[in-house]
Length: 272
Image (cartoon, rainbow, N blue to C red; front, side, top):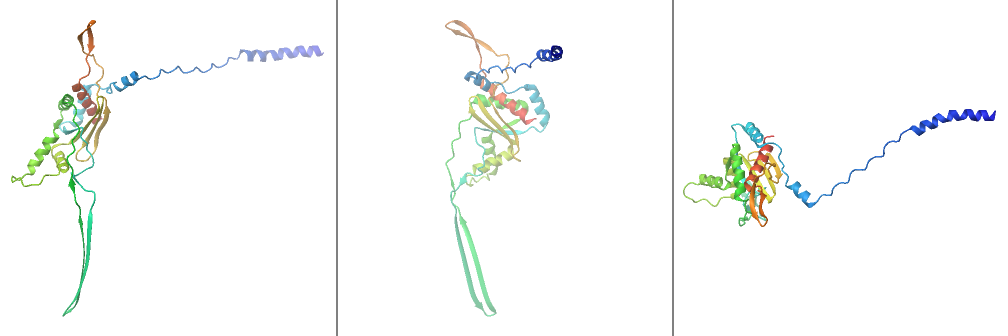
């Protein structure tokens, strides 16, 4: 009987063992492929990569549709700060003089009492020598920027010109006025002859910052940082004689093309 019982138990256990043996295990997670370390060349290519995807034709079409017949007049500050200093004049101290007096007396009809208090403030102001503004960007860069703005329909006004025009309009003819406050004259000229102000800063050869402001409301119309590199196109080539014969040399992006590209990116931001 014992032998028969043991024989009956074996078939009952066998199916369970076969199921466990046939069960497949999940595949072990794969290790992520090793990342190639960034080199200085990779970082340089990223810095010099074009930043615009939209075509120039679409940007100009959208900008003209957005402004229609109300194309703005734009003044450009070339590497010139537009900050919160509202006057050329400044001071480091102020003196305040206070005086108080009392007068009492009698008159036939009764008594009279007079009291008075005065306070006067005197502030000595000075005008520092005009700081020499850092040199503006190269003429070729300015030329590309102005030509692209003009092509878009924008009227570009010169800061120095509108300041002198505004000052001349205030002259009565006897030329007896004191020297005007340049900061206030600048703001008045912008308000009379421009609709927007473009503040252009060239940080390095491949780093530019542009901010566009509404001169009446102070609203920020556009703000961008760019390397000014146009999208890759069919690059022009030229042959150059070398010690190993003539070789093809790729022509680099010109400053004029960088100026045009910066304007296109600015117009795209203004018309979104």
